[in-house]
Image (cartoon, rainbow, N blue to C red; front, side):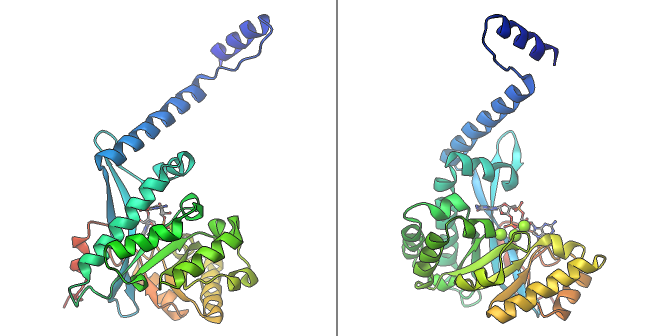
Length: 285
Ligand code: C2E
Ligand code: MG
Ligand code: MG
Ligand code: MG
């Protein structure tokens, strides 16, 4: 604060006004270090995918969500919440997102030969900048073809704000990919502001009930109402529903009561290396 005042005073004396805020400077330095680390991490192969089980009403594994992980040599395991926004801003999400899609399709390709895994689907998160880039449709199709994967096994998770960015571009891209069998899931549903009329225009397949509503399902009657409303809305639009962040049997039972048929959350498995999914293939006796 004192530094700032002194600097301003000096600057003012020279008839110029500059701001020097040490805190802001530190934040900018940290950000540019993270950015160069991100670039380096991508070229050094520090990224990997974790998989989180998605199960049906009987608890059987039906697929998984792909979650990006960054294993940094010094920072340790960095959460996507800490680097995805910067990757979006800097455009690094384009190569990073393309890598995720290719890896996911490679995994689907490896599952193809085994009857126990050949019907499992993978859900991949797609960010706004990535989706709206020119050539996104071709990128996805190329990844599917490279690994000989049926588009019906791939789901793309989009967010409400992404869909609202540019509705015409969104519908065109979704339709082109749907023609290849690719499915679309609306992530974090309920946290945005989509209207029913608007949702009807989009070729979606699934709504994903946001974790924030699942968390307090049993204690907050409003959240229980919201979950019920989302399930009803999905039914009337002909969409499937999956609840995310299901941690307890009581939450699962409550959602099931309201007509939910698919679940994801710590109750069924934490995100982890793909091998962890194998343990869930055959329900434990
Ligand atoms: P999301 O797509 O909503 O993913 C669900 C998040 O909830 C994941 O956090 C997951 O680990 C966490 N989660 C799952 N089950 C539970 C549960 O039972 N309890 C609790 N407390 N949490 C649970 P994660 O892996 O940290 O990812 C955070 C977000 O980062 C994701 O939210 C997604 O928006 C983004 N993200 C992750 N991977 C990618 C990617 O490859 N591309 C893009 N664009 N975004 C990604
Ligand atoms: Mg997601
Ligand atoms: Mg989500
Ligand atoms: Mg979420």
